[in-house]
Structures are given as C-alpha cells and as structure tokens.
Length: 86
Ligand SMILES: [Zn+2]
Image (cartoon, rainbow, N blue to C red; front, side, top):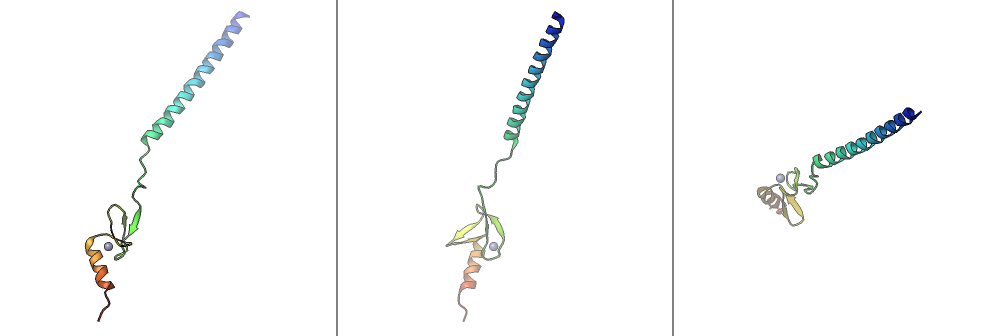
C-alpha cells in the first residue's frame, strides 16, 4: 500500500518537474526569438525621385522644396525641364 503512494508521489513530482522544464524551455525559446529578430528597417521610408521616378530610401534621397530626388543632377534636370521654353 505504501509502495503505491510512493509511486504516485514520484509520478506527480516527475510530472510537475517536466511541466516546469517545458515552461522554462518555451520561455527560453521566446526570448531567443526576440533576440534574433532583425530590427525593423522601417526607420527609412521610401520616397520617389521626382525626375526619374525611381524609389529610394529617404536617407539616400535629397529633398528640394517639397520634392525628392535621387541625386543633385536629377534635381538640376528637373528644374531645367520646369523652365518655360521659348
Ligand atoms: Zn532620379
């Protein structure tokens, strides 16, 4: 009779320990996922060059007035084409 109770206790302890370990493991996995997740690259949004209409990150673009350009020469060409001809 005593043997049965001891077996039950051992079984309960093993079950509890397994559950505890499983929860620790799951938490560890979640922490690993958080650490390995790449940082969002959303700090630079995409803008469009007003001259060639190429999309590029805002950090690489130059801003003139309310418009974006991929480089200074496209800004110059854009201004040239804006000039009234004749
Ligand atoms: Zn351009």
